[in-house]
Image (cartoon, rainbow, N blue to C red; front, side, top):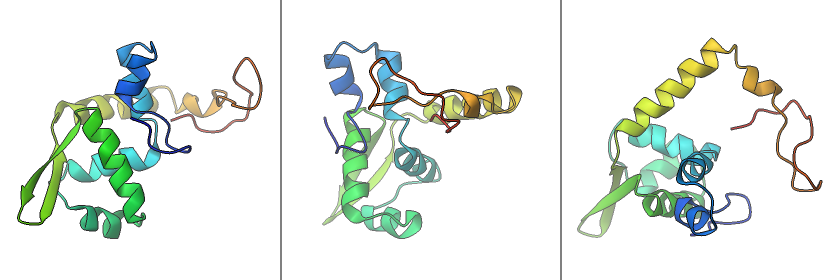
Length: 133
């Protein structure tokens, strides 16, 4: 499922394109806003309006990222009247993110020195010093 030009495809679209599932999962988590949504949902379920207010994102942005996370089977919702309450379907995702934080701490955040992928230069990365998520 494609989100928009900034967010990129989600896991199922990546896998359909031949990307290995683990790479597709990490690609789906590479978006900062999706990570913020996941981190917020780890504290409990929330409606789109709650996420908009708490994260300072546009409603359309939150909805698109939630759709991607649902497509990845990482998030689901329950309907209550006219409202939808979103929650994580895979709590072990937080273990994965905690492990990533431990790895970053252990490496001294050396990932900040990794070259960021470039979409303008053939062959890939350019050494920019940007953080690669």
